[in-house]
Image (tube, protein in one colour):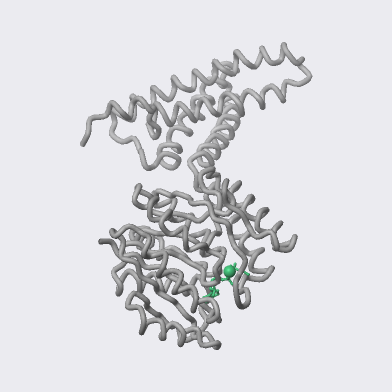
Length: 387
Ligand SMILES: Nc1nc2c(ncn2[C@@H]2O[C@H](COP(=O)(O)OP(=O)(O)OP(=O)(O)O)[C@@H](O)[C@H]2O)c(=O)[nH]1
Ligand SMILES: [Mg+2]
């Protein structure tokens, strides 16, 4: 049997938690017997007495648990504490994030469990996939923010698989929380949910989705964050992705390429001033740029795959030179061809096009596939012997 703990953060939800616990118990009866279902309410000492209602329920059901925070810690803070408690004290094999206000259909729990059974580490109740929805009664502003916001996040995160980054209905395997929990610095509702998912994805969690028709809040007041917190979510996502880009291999590759261009230019001037013939000045300065790019890419862009040893360094450097000859060939074939096509007036545009659309992708591909071998062709992967 695997222990499942449905964590429900509450703040002034007494009117909801009362019927919700009963309904959840009914749903629990429908899940396969492999799952041992529990409820953990994380209450921030709600002034309306939510905690008291839960204590009453605990007398009736022994699978209901309560964790009380002495002050309001926000949704993220409540989840962090609740998840820790569910894993450390209750020894959960699976945890759920679940809202108290009936916006999350409890009847979907078996579908979440099925996805987990099929191998998912994290299942999302998704409002923005086929079959999911947001409430019709929402005001225009909330709809626009919700749909637009999620679209923006999806666009920046570049993940077609995930449709709902902010959803609060989730099933999570403990290892994911153990890997991710320590990295989360943002505890505000949306940033908490987004960064949890972001780090989970990075940690290699298998993510699945279940369509969710987000319902109307049944009772009580919304604790939805205000406008300024919502705007901070956009800043958070944007900053995170800019940071990712600055740390990406492609950005480093581009930066090294640019230093190569500078080296080429400076050495050309230097060799000329030393009295070298134009041809030799071009040849040597180009080689200087190639050496520069080889060293910097090896030490920085592809540092995880650093080439070492005299023999290997020399043979790879030879390969690198051949790759550069390839790039020169592309440029000297497609450059004149382009000029012929659109006229010499547009030679700068032709050069930019050839470099950006042909030479850069060619170099990047060759570096990743041939020189540093960070990528593997799909049919190569299968040929590798099993370890
Ligand atoms: N423990 C705890 N729970 C919280 C806190 N803020 C919100 N919650 C709970 O988190 C869940 C989601 O909050 P909601 O206010 O429903 O947020 P929402 O669903 O985005 O907003 P609505 O659509 O208006 O309901 C509910 O069960 C809340 O009671 C908090 O500070 N502490
Ligand atoms: Mg709600």
